[in-house]
Amino acid sequence: MSDSLYKVETTPRLAQWRIENLASCTYRKSDPFKIGNWNWYLSVEKHKVVFVKLFPEISNVTRDNPPIASFIMRVVSSAFGDRKAITHPEIKDKVIKSNEDFVWTLEVPLSGKFIIDVDFLDLKIASPDGGEPCSIWGGEGFTQERSNARALGSLGIMLRESIHTDITINTSDGSIGVHRAVLSSRSPVFRSMFSHDLKEKELSTINITDMTIETCQAFFNYLYGIIKNEEFLTHRLALLHAADKYDISDLREAIHESLLEDIDTKNVLERLQNASLYRLTKLKTSCIQYLVKFGKIFEIRDDFNTFLQNADRDLITEVFGEIIGVWKGY
Image (cartoon, rainbow, N blue to C red):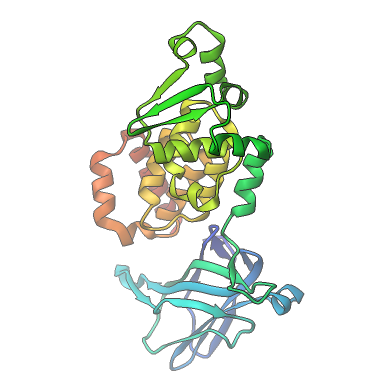
């Protein structure tokens, strides 16, 4: 391939370094790559055994706030066409300051091409008040700033305490009182309902039977600016449907960016199909690259076979087009 021998390919939480023909008594260090708040390096050293190291760049950021990392590292060898993976046990909440803090010793021979694959499960920093370390991927500020910018904090009290509500939302398993002025200001679809002589305006009732009351509550919590991060993450996909249905572009974009951050083998196929359904271009591209370019398709063969039987034909064609393009590069 034309890429640098030292280049590490990344997604927001995955890093892969492709090694070709590492001779004995050789040391190689990657180019820096950004994951989370830090620049990282991988290094590999081959003697009778192989040493693989992961460490952050030495800087003031690292000294003051060293990463507390949870990750899984794999070495994937495809010598002679036989793809084999060696997996290090999961590293949990390990402080990594230098190139001696994580060293993996491999006592198996590695020849030809192989891939060092690091799946970052979480990155934390120490709490300034001495409490529990905080994940940098919590996303609380991002989500709440996005929603709070469009709703006054006092509206949240009006929703929670049902102050002067004038519209009843009937869900599949309960009802919620809301304010037509808030809904109209946040969604052109709701505004149209209340601006014309439709039954929703006449009856002061909207039936949203494709949502549960729990999901609908999360939806209105976002519109009123009081959604919590855990609630947002739990209901992301249902909220994506609501954002699309009621044309709420800021919610749609917040979900899109959030879904990009934690793609893994358990959710990639579902996210790929939702990306196609809701026209989330960046998410679709990231999912396809995660499956094909990063080789995760080999780790979920049974699920991928089920995907091939049930998914949209155009989407399957797009995935296979990417597979063919990657294979031509080798």
